[in-house]
Image (cartoon, rainbow over all chains, first blue to last red; front, side):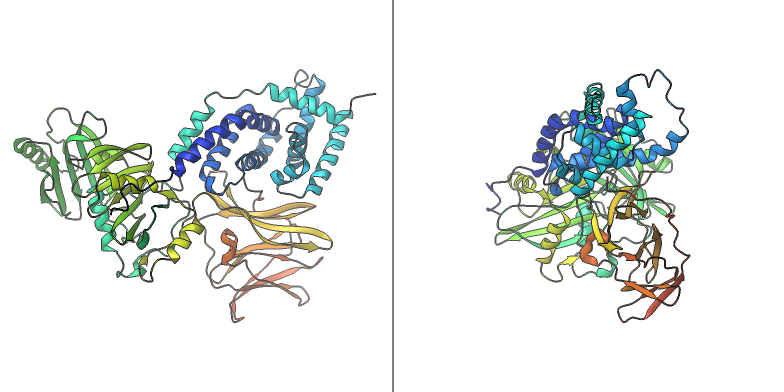
Length: 164
Length: 466
């Protein structure tokens, strides 16, 4: 067993992963929570969903060659899942009162919330996160051409809604 | 002129984002959750054995190569821990995975009491009581006093260390006075209850690897059990020394017992081997790295024939989305994929999603659900696709249409990973489905099931991974 004594052991993969994850947290966490808030409209849900995404990345670390992109895609997807589950609740929710819809920005965000999940995600990734179409396509799992169409139709739909 | 909507949207999003609060404890929460690790790894029903490493290793040896491989599970559940050493010069010589202990697996009540030592990890004295159907072999190793007796049709054993003869006798007498699984033991001052519950004798999920080089060998055991605890091990290990290993507390066990620690809650890892001292054990431990399914399969493939028993798979992390079909239907591009998901109740699911530029649809099923051999479960998606999954033995699926026309599809094969056993069929425009027929490799009909006409109503819609 002499070979074992003094063998140079590589740094534990788990420790490396945890360090990298902590760095990623410092760099990305707040931005992702803001992104998730914009996609879900709920600050509380945003925190949960982003934390879920980090936990998921922790599990899949060996496979995630672009961890930041992986996180963003996971957050976007989890927000969409969350939104689907809110649909029924939303149907039974009272409409916002006049005070809530007072400002133009509020009106725009309410209109955004009424868009389909993909259109909404595309718009937020473009106009909040400033992502290029290729990265939006990667996050949404579609082609760049589809992103173009989502953005174009999404903006048009927003205009229609706020001009009513 | 009014501001374009995209600029107003940018402003509104920026203002909303600025109003977002960020939990300062977010990192702590993530750390707690990643430390707890996922439920998929922490399967219930398993435990580090009563006699800790010794029994665990005995369990592995009892099913070592040469035993009937049919007693071992055909497939290990996904999402578990696989660790392999990265020391140069060693080759994997033998592997045992998940011995099948029969159903139900034997269990017994384990009652462990201990007087904690000053280091906060080990115990200065302990009393271990087992009550069950099996008469467990107990030995007086390293100062342990062992005694066993019958209580009706049950066997009771009491193993102690750090107690005087009089103290041990008092414990034994107190246990004999009442049913031993509930009797309050007459223990000296300073004892705490470490565990007192019914647990399996040997963990059903573990991997035992033996690695060799020209000058020696070492063994590595990973036993997975949500309830595995270091203090339970410590209270059964006289002479154990606390040790830091891989950034956590561990135990250096005497008598060649090796080095053991919890890699994470629910995964007890032990390294041991003939003649290995603390330095060698630590070197092996620190060299361990988790591997994914592909790497594990490659590793197993290199082990001499007959030296692997049980099941070799084991994904670490989660499978990704797998495309099971794509193309164009009437000029419209479509893509079908399988991806992991979580059910509303939080359980693991797989979803089949068919996406077109006009929308998407599909279905989800519990990950644990298995399609009956020879059969197919299908659903019509968006009126133009038939998506589903097939059981073992199905080589092709034929869809019978009104008017006598047919469409056939081959399910995605094993190479498709989680997509294996799924299929998607494009139905001709305007066609009416009548039945789905499954066929084996030779083209023989296995099952035939009538199908309702296409209707865009899957039980539950599927979404992208996430």
